[in-house]
Image 1: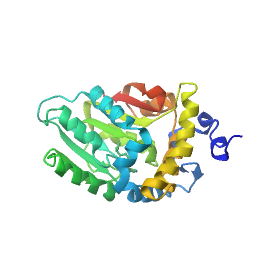
Image 2: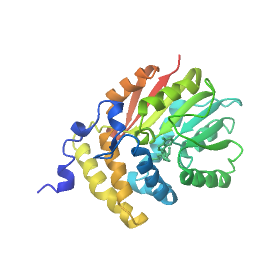
Image 3: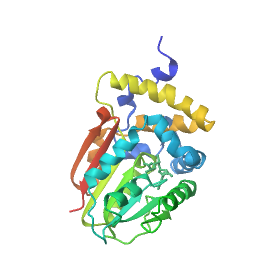
Image 4: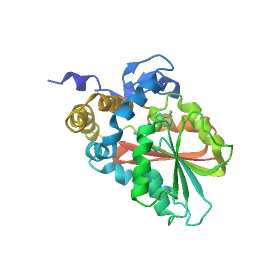
Length: 269
Ligand code: SAM
């Protein structure tokens, strides 16, 4: 017998939105009023901030580290001073720290996040790693970046875009703050494209992850939102079209782990 929570997601691809607009009112599988989603997302990350890094390891079996390493390898930051990256929805700093290290501590990284609790953990981690002089933390909304046009050499966002209500607005902001020739990279959970792995992944996501959340963080609800929001997010091809519509050129993507995660790349030319 198929358990009810699995039945709901037997056709995950049919659940996915094809346009970014559909994400504005999708809080996981629930429809919420326009303008309500951000508050609900913020509650989730205030709740999980203290356990965020541990839960990432448990939920992905450590795989998120490899995907993040691959993102930074594709970015290939130069080992010269004066190069800057904006890491949006940067949370506890994982991407920014990797980029600064990969540049031989030459790059300057700005971690931007809407959530003060996530940033507080990030600041703490930067101090402990001796990276406080290389990374700054800014509390702001991806849809309204507090930076002048053409400010950064690269814009990165990892596992963040699906949480932002107005994706097209955030992507246009990304394009605006990049310098001409600037690079856009977005790492996000995506559509699993391998038979069998997709079934295993559905079972893991909808049955195991909320239970791990309950056991480790004492609350399964935020993790139910996380897995539902992954199932709703546009697939690789549709998301690439959305990125192109925001003005980016040469948009391509790479799948990791059979499409569990995908890394989209674009350029401001
Ligand atoms: N990038 C980090 C990583 O890969 O570990 C954190 C990703 S975490 C799953 C998603 C982050 O998106 C949270 O820190 C959350 O506060 C942030 N976020 C959600 N909505 C946002 C918005 N509108 N603007 C900026 N950050 C946002």
